[in-house]
Image (cartoon, rainbow, N blue to C red; front, side, top):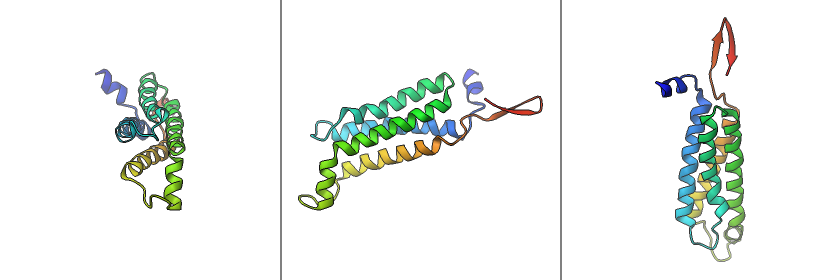
Length: 142
């Protein structure tokens, strides 16, 4: 009964936040599996999506939905930026075509995952997180 009452007044933004949290967990695990032990591995890139997952759960649990979407954007952007920074040499080698002429599957998988996570988090910042409820004829946002 508690869960039904908790989820009753949630808007699209809340559900997108839940999806972003799940996607961040997947992106963090995929990064760890594909880049773990390599010379371009960065612990920050692994920890950032995990922090997004945990902080989203905590902030949504206490009702701070707007702050949760902002934390998601910051965490996703930090993870993506650190991923690009830790792979800058590889990116430059591919772009110039010195040793390698195409990106590897692990790079594309991680880069697309972080890019999607960052873009969806930016979109989620502008969505309503809770529905408005009518109180004596007036709509009040929670």
